[in-house]
Each structure stands twice: as structure tokens, then as C-alpha cells.
Image (cartoon, rainbow, N blue to C red; front, top):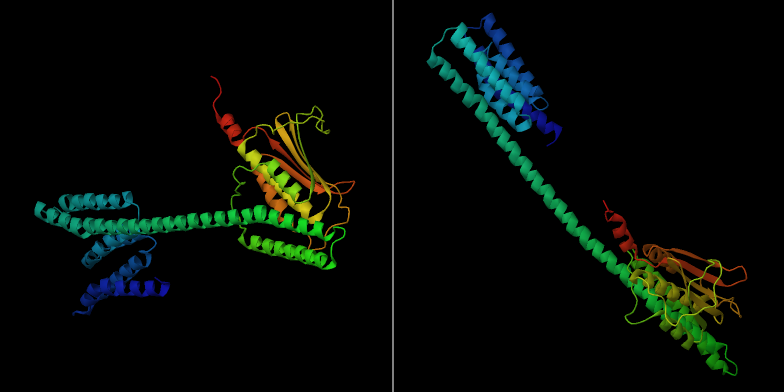
Length: 400
């Protein structure tokens, strides 16, 4: 309801409640007392209407006290009693006002004026039906409106919650698709490009076949960039999901890269007493790691091999997994490419950003950059214990 509508409704209310005073004032004889009574009635009702929205209890008091001057104020008591219950949430002040009216009326009528019990009972009945009952009706209407509003807001909150849950599911699915496309399809495309590059550089190859191999490599590079564009559209803010193909291990990644023509060496080592040096020991199998940590290590190797195949073809690559104390160090280092990097668009870094988030969720840290002697290194420190298990252990109460 606009302010203009409120003013018009207040004006209409004033006109209706002032009608009894106007009728008395317009009825002959037109004495001076009648004019004064008319002005008091119009002014009192006007004041009550003016303050009824902000101070409904004050408006009720104005018309109740007005009955001491003019009996026509009685017609306004039910209206302002209803408005007091409808517009005010306070109950004690209203109850105090009604109790004060009842006590004052009793003292005035039975004590000072000496009216009979019948007259007092009539006045008490008028107070009950003209004051208390309308106030109860107004309070009921207020509570009903509050319940309706609470139900509406609750339904809106439920709707927003359902929409939010659906949106989170959609974003997680988009992120999962984007990550699978980047990790699996991007890795496979890089291996195809590597095979095409190796074929293009092979000795004694027919020029037509060499040109065809170059076209294949260029087409794969273009497809990879298009894939990155699609991934950029799909990727949204959501909780990262760490996945790897069922039954596939780091050794399978390395073996697949070797079959594609990469010179890859897998080095799984035991704990080193010096964190800055890599010992010469070797393990036949990786140490037992939490699932989240092993997923992060798997993703690091896949991303690093993919980047090495794309940007350092022909370079030797070393994959190391070293156990050190309460953690492991996963490192993938590629030497400088012997023939220089393949031509193509620059790297976007989106894969390393996703990998850094994956390592962070596993409780580790990631560093990546060029080596001083050339080449590129990706290194992550990962915990051996499960971060979730550590949190639960920290929250568990100690001995008492």
C-alpha cells in the first residue's frame, strides 16, 4: 500500500468517526457549547487517526479520554481498539489501559457519582464489547497475517534452497565433466600430438607423409585449444572432485607415455634423511597413501606428463615419489626439449590451477616452474595421513 492510499484511507476513517460530532453540531440550536464540542470532537478524532499508525495505543487513549468530554467518542473506541490489536504487538500496555479504565470507571461511578450497580454493569459491558473484544479481533488478525507471512517466507526459503541445491548439483556436474575432459581427453590428445611429432621428425620419411604428420599434429593442437575453450565454459566455482580411472595407477600413466614415445623414468624411493636430496633407493610399489593423497599424486603425474608432451617433445621426463617422514614428495621434471618446443598457442595454466586446488584439498602444497638448467618441474608435498582423520583426531576429547 502506497503512502497516498494510506492518507486517503485515514481521511475516510476520520470522516466516518467525525460524522456523529458533525451531526450533533449541525442540529439546532447552534449554541457556543455545541461549536466547542464539535471542534473538540473533530480535533480529537483527527489526532487519534493521525497517530494510529505509529502509536495505536496512544490513539486509543485519546478517544477513551475524549469520552470524558463528549459521549460521541464512544463510537471511536471499537475502531481504535481493533487498530491497537492489529497494529501493535504489545499486549501488556493495552491490558493495563483496559484495567485502568475499568478501575477508574468503577471508582468514578460507584464512589463519586453514586450510580447504581445496573449502570456500572452496563458501562462494564460497553467496555468489554467496545474495547476488549475489538482488540482481541485485531490481535487475532495480526497473528493470522504474521503466520501467513511466515509461511510465505518459509516457502520462499525452501524454494531458494531447492534452487540452490539444484544449482550446486549442476555446477558440480559441470566441474566433473570439465575435469574429466581436461584430465583424460587432454592427456590422450597430447599423446597423439607427441606420436605425430615423432613421426614428423623420423628419418627417411616420405615428404607427403611428413606433411600429413605435421597436419595431424597441428590439428590435434587446434583441437586441444578448442577443448580448453569448452572446459573454460564448463568450469564454474564448485567443490573440486578428484577422480581417476578405476584400476589405473601412476605406473600405467608412465607406461602409456612410454608407448607414445616419451622417454619417461619412474622412480619410487624410500624416506630420505636429507629433505633437499633424493636418495638412490627404489621401491617396487608406492607407499600406502590415503585415497585423497593418491588421487592428487595421480593427477599431478597426468598433468605434468601432458604438459611435457605438449611443450617439451622429445625431452627426458623423470617421475619421482619419495617418502619423507610424515609425508611424501611427488615430483615430475622434464629436461629441455632437444629441438625446442612445438609451435602453438601459449599455455593457459588452467590445468596447474586445478591441480593446485586438488593438492590443497589433500592437505599438501604445490610448486611449479622452470628449472635453472632448463626444463620444467612440478613438485608437490602431500601428507601420508588423511586430513579428515587428523581433524577428527584433533576434535576427539583427551583423557580426563
